[in-house]
Image (cartoon, rainbow, N blue to C red; front, side, top):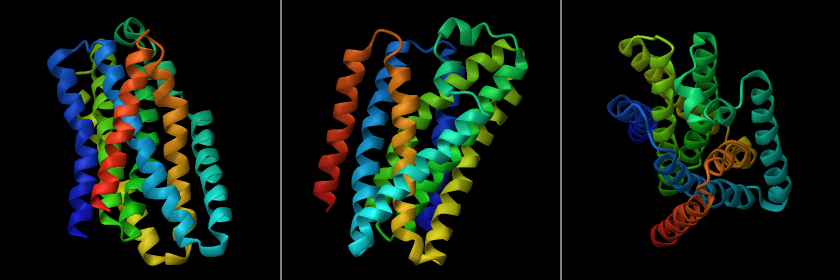
Length: 250
């Protein structure tokens, strides 16, 4: 339990680290942001497949394939519903000028709320990995999510400062988005620990949410600014790094 809590704080704290970077540099180049985000996408892709979906097949026994497919689509549909209720992240940060010159505080706060809401299922994915008893796999998943949270935290700062929000309140908002991930991690851990019967479905559900985020949010964002070649290789590096880590730890 102590490791779960420390990991949850680390995953949420990655958003705060990104926010501090955002304060320090104000304007983060799209090249740097896209490479980091693509690398994180590769890590998350490997974590979703190796740490969540394949274990779902194994724990599900003869019904493993059914649990995995239904769980993946259930996770994707869940985030699709969330996307209908809140703005798409890549639409809000698709233009650096648009983001930094946005004077509409309501839109900026809605953007921050969207990040916070998307952080909940990501945290659940990390917690489910621990609930399954696969500590090394759970740490890989958490690491991938944490890497993604750093550029997320970075892009929160500029729009809020431009909209007139004081630095102290801006930092608190970034902190809240990170705390949402901590809560999600604990929810995922306790849900699976208390009801092991839902483990195959829960693993696939968490994997489906991660696949949805990668395809719908991360890849479009990293390919929107002319750096798609570098972004593609960064994704492959992230994926292969996690693949090698899984093999060596396994």
